Length: 267
Length: 267
Image 1 (spheres, rainbow over the protein chains, first blue to last red):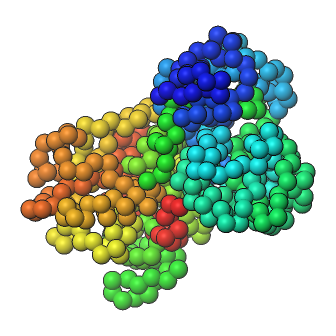
Image 2: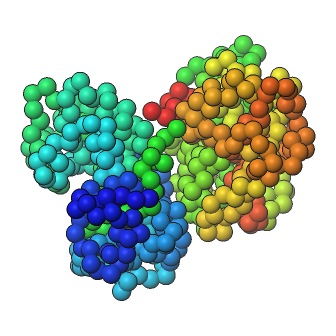
């Protein structure tokens, strides 16, 4: 797997992760190593792992599980067998009882034998597929983060985990809505088909101009707001439980897997 | 959801389950209530539930999870909110330390607060879709069970669970192989696309005439043996751990869900 960085430098996923491991790469991962899937990271203690895995399984659109480490192991043996989740992301967030306490470049000092790492599909992957198919994405044109909204759609709960689905919004010209559905539906491992199209008020979004995360973007005449389940959902849901320890990637600073994006296409 | 029994009697899934609950239906469920999905049942204690769920997630083709009950609850709230897994299957098998000790019509006397029920997609559903599409299935023509084989393909392990994939085999005319792939691929929740086509020796099957479960069926001239991941896999893998208690459906005596089969089609 060879991919080109925006700078023109050719870099494999392993090379990118090695830079991160050495602390030489602390920037975000948008658009880097474009041929492979990137992933959200959620690290929790074993006592929460079953409920969290079940929550993800019951809510595959916001929480598409790409890999789960063995108890205590930082190695994602499916997504990147040579990687170490303690060092191979550019930046992390560490929460104690729901409060952000650190934003380190490595989590080696926090890692213990009773932790489990979950890698969940990420919209960077999904957007890459749409761009490859010739679609334009407003937030990228605007050079900002995609707008994300807490909705009135409740996830299916599992044990201690429950909460509303968070969605991201992309304005799409009416004539391209069907294409956007079809392209994204082929990739269930990175959120899949949209969960709602066209009527924000129907899913509890009062005003598109005020996203709960990210930046607002204009919806122009002839465009329809399309809403996809968002990877912020599992983080928000896990956070609500205020676990003694929870570690995630820092926003935009994803885990770069070895998984070629085309291999994620549903048959 | 209304469906017709082979006898011509119209019966809903709830009516079928009510008969089973009253002990009036102890026969198998092949071909009954044809519009809805049927499911394999595996009941395990909580201490094994996380590893088993992770095993299923890592091996979605042999172990497509349709529903998981809350700890101690016998209600499959997604697959059939009004059902009770302790009484609503026609017949069960109860294993202690890997040994079959009972084949009761109800498991009320075995149920405890630390049990979790897993419902996994079943090939009856998948075959229904193929038959609807005009395909002929040899084992049904022969009036016997589908032949199943232990293969040399190892499942991805998870905690204590590991083992080979079990496959079912259906001979399909060469000109219909592509159609069989396409039809089954649309239903990942009931085993999805075949895992192998045409070369039994390549997956460790020495002789098709000697299946490990079910009955042998002839492969005729111009036909190709097609192999699908089989729901026996998770049972065989769980059994190998010899858990203190494990309960399953009796072979062919499946759980009849409320889930309309078309709703399981991948987008």
